[in-house]
Image 1 (cartoon, rainbow, N blue to C red):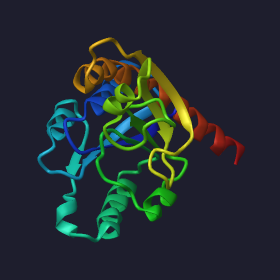
Image 2: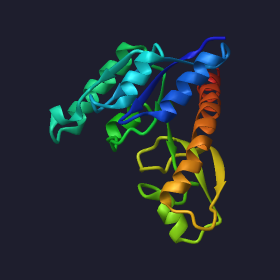
Image 3: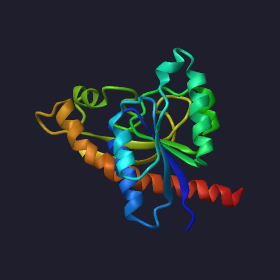
Length: 200
């Protein structure tokens, strides 16, 4: 089975990136082959984790480009295309992407978000779920669209909010579900891309 060439974009430690790399390494039938890990921060700990796992890793420092977000994204886009990337997984990539970049990779870029979308787009998701009195929190993997955290949902995992939970304890309990969910959602996304190519 042909595997789609995967890039994972990170800004920090990249624990979800690590989960994807591990899933691809453990399963010869996994539909994505990691060919690039890219960070907008040269000091991101995830770069060393990626290198230790045998994945090519590169940093493109967004600060070099000042306020010119598109110039930064032109460099990212050229690097992705140079590596033959066919699908992108955002894994804690802390940059809001411009409409230009989103359109360029539309239908081939997914993201993981720590809430049960469409609830709690953006930041501070765990605290917002607790403050709202929700019985459950969780995580979602979705296609990336022009609106932040607004793309079509691919898969979700639920986590109960327990008495006495705070944002840190809830986040710690949600993270293993993220690591389980993201590889499974990536499989679904790859299947859709391959089916669309066949239909096209």
